[in-house]
Every structure is written in C-alpha cells, then in structure tokens.
Length: 75
Image 1 (cartoon, rainbow, N blue to C red):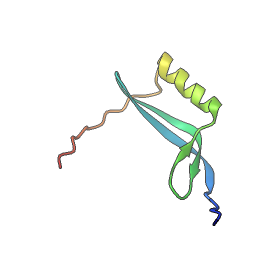
Image 2: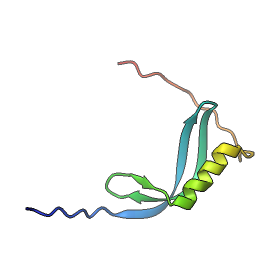
Image 3: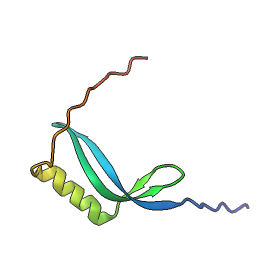
Image 4: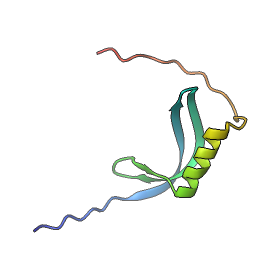
C-alpha cells in the first residue's frame, strides 16, 4: 500500500475575518491565523476563536464602518 505524505506549509498571518449574521456583515481585521501557502485555508487557535465569538456576540463599539455595494449573481 502506498503511503501518502502531506507536506502542506502554513505561515502565520493577520487576516480579515468576515461573517454574515442576521444583522448584516461583521468584519474583524488583524486576526492572527495560520494560512496554508498552497490552498489559502485559514486555521485559528481556540483562544482566537473565543475572542472572535466574544466580539461578535457582544457587539462592542466598532473601530469604523464600511459601505459596500452588493450584487446578485445571475447565471
């Protein structure tokens, strides 16, 4: 049986986390993550996930607001 070896590389980066909620979009900047060089997949440490949840659930005062257009994809 051939043995598969996975050699995916991850780098530490700060990323922008975007979440769609019932109230609209929540954007959190400068979130520490491990990002796959090959696929772009993001991995977050458990403590980071807890902080993200706290920010989203408690809706503290945001640093700033953004306005962006929204389009519908029509095939």
